[in-house]
Image (cartoon, rainbow, N blue to C red; front, top):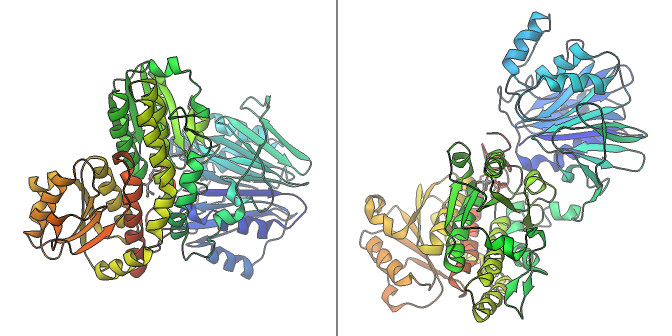
Length: 608
Ligand code: AGP
């Protein structure tokens, strides 16, 4: 996902912009650039590849000024090269724009602008914005930006500067997150707070349709009719070190090891031990309203879709409400059966995934009540949903989601407990669930203390070309998640499957070259999994089993066994996924992958 940073103040802009871009590297990008007003005009420097190449270009040819904008680009239109990198400028080079999002009518606008004599140099949709502003400019930058934005269809988060109205930055947002940072006599704009946290904790989140005009004397937020808007100031609670690696080789490993704490944080203040239920502040519904729903839809993408499958299982088991899980990208284009008795749960770590956001809007338009299960505070999904729960996993920098996943499962269990106790779940059962939840952080810690065993296993299997992950019940989604973790960071092909489905095809793949990971905790379907393991062994497959108890029937059948602590069935994925996260991580490291920023991937997919 692209990143935006802007600065206006009394300090040199270039080093601040570069530092901000580095804080955004985790989002995934393939080129970068800056534009600085140096008193004579707009100076831009751009480079394909990593920010270090942009830094080299700036060292070779410095730009000085205390007002500027910068961008990391994840290519959507046009190759990832220097010409297509942002910022983009108008014909005279007096206006510079950085942009996150997609201009859907860019071709038509470009044709019209070329008919007016504008010359384009890049393949991007973004460049259209610079020429639209140029065409509309009449001395006031924000007026020209407004006129340009009225002509745009699509999504944008932009920052704009001009040497002809040179003491301001104009920012605007529609569908791509943007915030204003309030410093001491200096102001920032950024696509997320990590870019500016070193300078301020006071931020104003822009809403869709907002513009912000930043000068050295302050900022104001206006709408597309130039009407002033009131926006509250938020204080960022997490610390910079939380987005630093903290001594770990990779953000992903740090985040795997943070899980005892993040699971604790997700439950903090939300468990009512005596009543055997959960307290959810952001529900925004009375118990009576909550009981009104006779169906649930859970929509998400990727790892969040895997936690959705676990949520489906636990909600149907404990609340007896029918639950459908939908890929957001599919849901949004179907004609789903959704009405005012539908609770639509929307799961997203980033809170910005375009498909998930669109699916939520579609469900709401059809009358559903939307409820977000999100990690990033202040992101779009929680600001548009009608209620929700923050999973409080803290910034998740590694592209492969780990701590957010386990906290999503915990958050879903809290919601399930809350609804279940309003229905047929007894206080005794409720207390059992709470007891199991409270034990999770310590149990996760026990597993992490044995990470070395998984690293040794990774050494043995790092050259495998394919993996199969098999599980049943609550741990079929765990199998999917384990496979996704491995494939997205090690680039080894891996598939997750329901264990019983293996005999309907995938068993043809089994041979001595195929490692098969079984998620086999001692749950209600354990005996069935045992027979699936035996089927694989009979075909010379290598079996790696995540178990929770000694099983005589498996004696001599397992090539490798990793035992995890026991918990209630619905929480087994939280424990079983930890060794799978570690296995994927260590194999990827041993294969030399860029673990935190795997090829082709972005941390948040804010385009379709
Ligand atoms: C997970 O490891 C992947 N990075 C990806 O599948 C991710 O879960 C998906 O893009 C959804 O992201 P979200 O949770 O931020 O909406």
